[in-house]
Image (cartoon, rainbow, N blue to C red; front, side, top):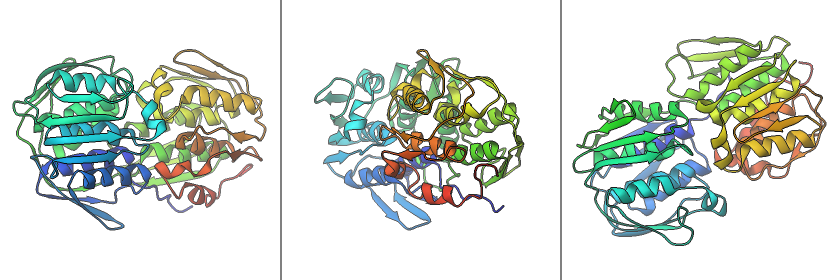
Length: 411
């Protein structure tokens, strides 16, 4: 079958927009993701006074190492966690008064470890309502730099935001991290900073970022590995074959590691230099897997788990409870509604083999819940969604692309 065209990575696009805005010169992003989250990030940059030129296949950003062009701005971050966490950090390096707010869903998500670290660095930052949540105002006067301790147990995005800020500080930054989750996302950040001319050092649990700023570049965006997980899982579940070009052995994104879980379950996996192919073999074995580093793909595995020959136990995923929704509980709830036996703990979920029955999936407005249970629907007739269009957050054309797959029950 023809290769599957997966849109660009949300994680890479958000980081690239920050780096491009902070760099000296004009940066061209090639095949960035166009979705609600990334459009919201780009629009946020525009509200801060950055110039962002957008065509279908490339975005160009005029960098401003000195910070936002406007002395005052009001930025709405929509549902985007990267937008809501990265843009206030970028604004802190400038000079002016910048207010940030977000959707009701994003307002519920935590920010305090990051905003506490920014305050420790001397940033004048005020939460207007609930402490540690949007809305917030940054009264920026640049950031001197120095040393800070960060609890990154809820999200690696807190560390990424500080690392991205480091070269914009006057003296550089030393960030000592405790309880870090989703380590591969930090590795993405460091690799991308290198592409923009900055080398991050590491001394055990301390990351060392030099001052000096970024230089503009042309940066191609990889296909989104988290999005690819639904298509790879579809192949494993139905006995079909899916090839995703642009994701191979050199990929930055840790979520490509999901295919190794599928390999352990019995699928055939080929990872080439610039593409990955998953072929279903007609069987899925039970598995116990630690998904701390690839937790965005936890719902994908949960959605195919009932079809395995034995229990599927997913461990060390407490941070999935503070995503767009409590993903661990949302997966358990929907599987139980389908008649599947599920048990959960604070940071784990175990799913027994069963025959799911069709039901309306309660999405909680979370794009990953929709896309994961769309895979279940390949073997379970009658699955619908209470909010199918929330996929616009990362993949507006998901339903059309998924429907076009020649993979169905019994395929």
